[in-house]
Image 1 (cartoon, helix red, strand yellow):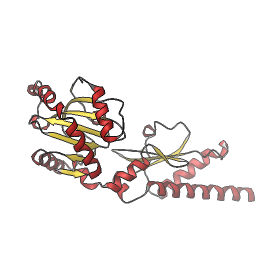
Image 2 (cartoon, rainbow, N blue to C red; image 1 turned 60 degrees about the horizontal axis):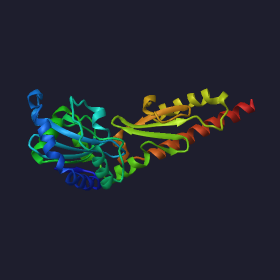
Image 3 (cartoon, one colour; image 1 turned 180 degrees about the vertical axis):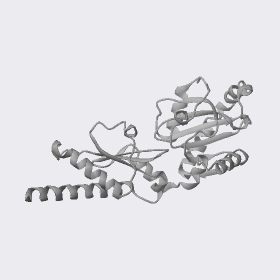
Image 4 (cartoon, rainbow, N blue to C red; image 1 turned 45 degrees about the horizontal axis):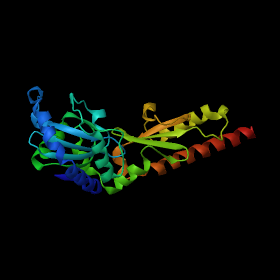
Length: 267
């Protein structure tokens, strides 16, 4: 099975070919723990390269290779009960950089019950292995692997444009499995005295636009004062433009604030 963003799948294929030498030690490591694993058919040894592209290479008990790019680092979203020591992490990092042009801070390896609980953007695996897992997702009403069926190159392009970046001069965006989270910062050209008023006006606009607030914990890189946050469904990235939504929000807020100030000065 091959689903998801094709440009990523092509790079995954190349990465998988270069990392075939991991198959033997992975199977040996996995077999050494097979008596302790409940669902052996789901068990894999997974190598994760956390970066802007969360690519993973995994091997199951049959020696099949499973390749994927996920929205989040699998080791952050799902537990790995047995971690594997790497013989040459530097070599793995160099290979990843050759393929993806990015250098992760580290490589993580361990036994997983596949799939990790994060949304997949690209996925390549044997049909028998993949079909069983996707069928179980359909029964449970969840989308991890099957999410890859809903994304394309346009989704990936937009994701790269907004994730962990300022999408306007005053709005910062982070994307994770729970959605698209946008933080609007307090304008620097507005007196501190008026910031509480701006915040209340922003809440009214958020309510009018039927947007949900984002958790402040989603904005770890922002040092400036956050005026308000809101979230968008992850699925909306294919059809809508978060930057345009942020621009519209900022415009409404600016116009409302200026109108209030003009009115106040007339009293």
